[in-house]
Length: 260
Picture: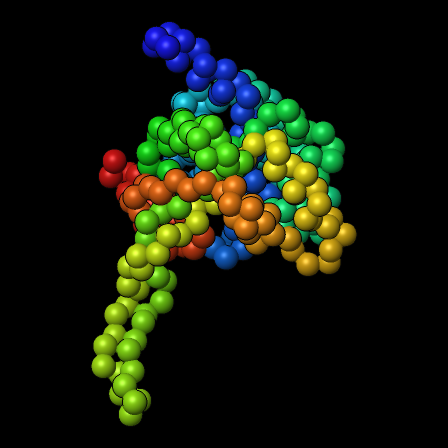
């Protein structure tokens, strides 16, 4: 296969991929109650823009935003996607609807997600400094599907900073070692995931929209795929992925982006 054929095949696979942005969250943990988290400004632009721009820069043009809290503000700002040069649809979850798993199933049931296409799940409160990650993930995922018969690929970082101090204590109760916020060399889920249409029945069967509690697809769906030996992994460096969940993380990322 020559380069032109490879490029054409890649473009075809991009067209078969929908980008799902789970943007229904609040910024409650950051002490902000009047703005959806996806609309928080970071280094001069909203978090949602970083997410869309990264995927658009890799050629993806089919987007679905799963919204909840104050969805009108995001819809008004983002619109139909023309300002980004992409197409954007929305799935608005009902009030008192908790959990990413429910949001996904609801969008599937309403046929907002095209069930003939795969989905790339992304979060607006994750800053990815590797701007080629979406296309790298697609290529990595396709290898897993073709060579290992996998149906989903989850992105991990090779380690992360533990947010608390850690101590070692001897038999007498004396602290012999103390480290504040150590770096933990454990594979850590970033939440970024690429899934084939064959995952949709698992989502439909595993998630109860009427459950009173929050239902997260990472807790319910991914473990099932892993037990099936159908979940592939992609590991990225820890300095590539920066979640924005606290005011300290926000301030750290603001400083880093401004310096860049």
